[in-house]
Length: 434
Image (cartoon, rainbow, N blue to C red):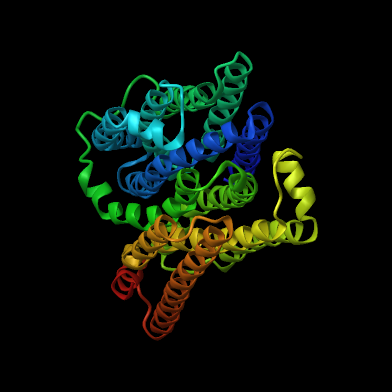
């Protein structure tokens, strides 16, 4: 398990590095206005993908339950059926994208009509991929999951750079997403599907495993969604000049957020095991939140000490820079990233109702982007306020969860000393207290 975790961290960090390189390459191969459109498209893809990522979280927790109850051999059956379930609304959204394609192109001043079909195809494949990745994550196959992420990011970069170099512009940059997702899906199916077919003769019921986790989709989407809506709305409301400094700040924030996302992917199944056992693993909690602190402090240090250097590394000299804007954006994204990890902790414990607070905050934040004066500073301020609110809500709820779990664990230990209990009795007592 430790070896798998190390391999996953290396591959996932490399995959996120390639995603960063994709942004860098596009920033240098395209004109600033074209790159602003590509960054907006990347944010639209992120919004669509975050729906898939939230769905992946639910499938991952459900897959962990499948492993514990009926064995790892049934994960393929569960994940494939979950993918079919998720593909139904994905088809509807893809059709809507195609129907309203002309309006979409007009809003973002996209001349190439191929952009919208590539987006629709990318989203449909990504939902199927999310179910497969959730199966790998829930069955603790982290090395394989990291390889899938690496393949997706690598092929996206190669295909997009090649097509842009051949003169396909924004459409070529968008096509790389569909190519990367398709390759990653093929690898996921190959690795997840049992060799020689499923060993189970009876059908596995999907709903009992997935239904309790679906509210987790709303909680995760509240975090994921707001991380991408700002650039999409900014692209429709700001001028090309204002977008130059904003694109650099948004890119810096996304790198921070994806680092936290990789950490959350690794921690979620372990958080789930911790709460299933009813015992707090303080080493796990310290390692997860300690790693998050190192990432956030490191990024903020660079952003505040050498903002101009960070700007140059991200987008080059052709883009207008704004150190204060980037610093505000990094602060907001750091708070949002912290809220993401805590939300995964809550999801692992089954505290899904946190979505009742997170989703309204995300909605208010999105409305503020749409209604406030469209300036980079106002958008960065909205991000900072909304992310702080999410961090407070998730942090307070997470602290309450850990306090109650520790209290239940102490109470059970005292009871066990007074009157010895069987292992099953301890688990039942823990479940009642949870």
